[in-house]
Length: 497
Image (cartoon, rainbow, N blue to C red):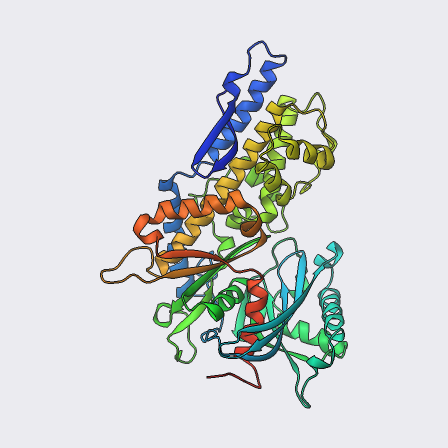
């Protein structure tokens, strides 16, 4: 009989076993099928294992790729993109600025009033808009026309308080959460789409020019002052209020990180000497791939079915877009090979991406004695109503395995960033504080994932160093940061010194 522990309430690495396949009575009807299901779960758990030794190997492999990506363009799976952000906010920025944040199936428009020294953010207003699936694989014009139409609606709702001075344009920070090769703070060409987008004609084009064309077409008097990726925006937003912020990590639909690099450590930088001596680097770590990553047949199957097979492997095991799909694939195999849900495979279980990560999170974190949340989601989403408590506990276990692997691998990625900045060890006479701004729905809302990541990072760093490293939630960080960077690069610069 298989001996796979089934956990309901867990803190990463310290699991509370509440039942196990081993205690199932041997006379149970269809015990052979139950045992087969438990074998599938056990095998999956073993393949997803992330002992500390493996996580250190992942971090070291990512560090090697980081160095290679900084040395030359195309030298690594990690793009290590130069952001052209060398001057981060001081907190003295002043004026009215906008942000457009495009990073997944939704985009956000935001208006920010900065009050100058000591006043910070005076006010902010935002709206979030869903992008129709058809536009994610349609034409470049159709996508940007839709976005600008919504942006124009947002601006049109403004009252007299937001009127521009004569001769001025509104200034926009544009957060674009896809790999881009930048040529300045306000221009950059798309390297490739990710996260379900696939509009081939946009690849190789200047994304700011595409947006500007749509704004001109619709008569929107606005210019892009800063063009950034989401972790770069999040880093800037964090720095605006906390000078100790030196890196940012996004864990949402996708996964990425940015950090402040020393100028002399960027061999591929051939521009003018950097006055600040630093440059923000967008790692594009989602594309990291290594033999040390614990991948399963479900991951390989998922990868093969995506729009970009072989790309974004690290993202596909750590980010919110894919965790639920991996769980679905495991449950489908249990249904097919072990009749886990009865003699027929539930039709809904065959539908790709039917289990979103918010559903997985809710099931994983179900604390009711009878796992009522799990039962309700199985009934409402998958139309499976005949589950026993024992079956629901196994489903929670599968969610636990997927989330734990993702969270622990994310912690390994953060360790590699800290190693690159030489902040993974204590130096004599130093006790510098390192703050990493964290953003994204996965990190914010999936409590077990967040707790697991933080526990694992502390374990990797050790007690002394972990006390100097703080992960700080930066709500709306990438949107706010983009607007603040628009202020830093304004044509009409206003600051309170």
